[in-house]
Image (cartoon, rainbow, N blue to C red; front, side, top):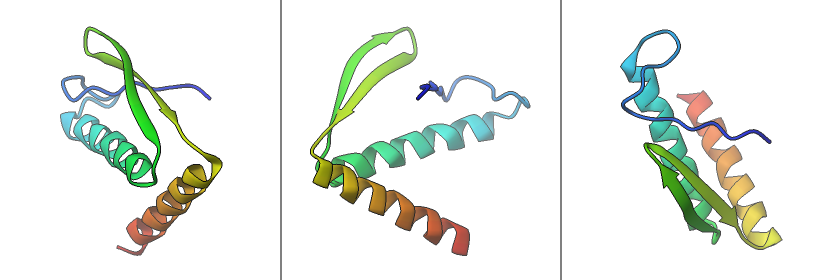
Length: 79
């Protein structure tokens, strides 16, 4: 699965800073869900503004994360 790095200081492809900020917020929300599900999120390294992170955990933690992510997606769609 490819990893996409998102930076708040980088313009998005269509030139709007707002979308880049929203994308960074999305990544932060996903990482928060992973932590709350009991997964370990580590910063493996950083080169310039690009962060490389790993997420690890048990299958039960992964299931909790997937459920939280799906529940968040359905709640966002209902708004």
